[in-house]
Amino acid sequence: MSSKNLTPREIVSELDKYIIGQDEAKRAVAIALRNRWRRQNVSEELREEIAPKNIIMIGPTGVGKTEIARRLAKLDNSPFLKIEASKFTEVGYVGRDVESMIRDLVELSVNMAKSEEQKNVKTKAMEIAEERILDVLLPVKQKEEKPEEPSEEGVIELSHDEQIVSHNNTREKLRRLLRNGKLDERVIDLEVTESHGGPMIEIFSSAGVEDMGLNIKEMFGNMFPKKTKQRKAKVSEAVEILAEEEAQRLVDMDKVTRTAIERVEQSGIIFLDEVDKIVGGDSSHGPDVSREGVQRDLLPIVEGSTVNTRYGMVKTDHILFIAAGAFSFTKPSDLIPEMQGRFPIRVELDALSKEDFIRILTEPYNALVKQYKEMLATEDLEIIFKDNAIAEIADVAALVNERTENIGARRLYTVMETFLEEISFDAPDMNKKKVVIDAKYVREKLEDIAEDEDLSRYVL
Image (cartoon, rainbow, N blue to C red; front, side, top):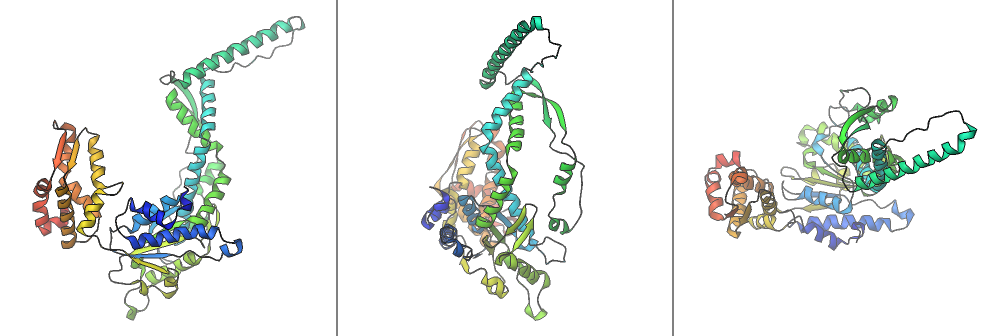
């Protein structure tokens, strides 16, 4: 089933494989993704009128806000950009302008489309690379031009035909050897195109270059002829180098650009993190220019406008914006009214409990326990985590989050890395190839750190 046709229930089911809990947020993004498919299936005149229902996720750090948005984009194969709203400043101040995120998203989309197109032409590129290798292994002899001698014309023509047949037979024998890998270790002289053409240029500017819509590197690259260089390489390596070079040539960049821009306009997702950091401060001192100004600059992009990029004009009307923030000292209603209206869906994510940590450690496809088991298995070391060990890890993580800064599930990484440090270091030299980790082991490694609040601030 195509990801484009997944029902909301199926989308949530896919997200459940990687993210524990947060059902309300999953349902909200699942509906938003399904609405895109619905919009594509309504009448054309109404299609342009249906705006995406942008979402604000409210919750502390490390509870899954970014992961939900990232997995959603991967599920739909959509161009996805995560950016901190606090990186932007109002136009006229030093910093990035808000339109730069659209340019970044287009750049990502072009790279995605180009990569897909290169895969489509891979077979053809390999065929051309193979011919180029054979040309190096068996150069084609140019027929010397001589005055025709009528009396011997027939004999010369026959001799030439025989040479062609002999050359072709040899070439086919080499082709078979090449395909069977019998020539992989042979070193040949290869002529390849240099990837860096033109002079090195550095431009120092706050934000002006982005507005130019010019690619300086490309501009100078086209002015100067592409250089080639000779290098020695094994045949196996040469095939890969030439196939990559030919794939670049076979890709239709006009088609790639059209596809990339269409994807951005119809299915792009921008995740605006730390949106609570651009909420104005104390109103008694008047509006904070650098914060409220950023909101006002963001507004046209979120509402729908046309942005100039080096690949052409891009409309932002149907890009899905997912904003996120802790909103510890502010609330979404502190955003300017116009901005609030552009984010009609608000979902609150739950803080993670010890029980959630236990599930995070074991249930997802990319669970931490599975990751460490697989990594240490590469050293022929089998790690067995007992249930009471996992409960102890979750307990320590929850305790440290409570005593110090609550960084959610990210705390599990620091806890796991700390008590497994000795095993990770000694793994290649260990004679014992099986280690059982229980609650006692975890407690011994972490007890002093967890109990000393000052120490845990620095270590965990």
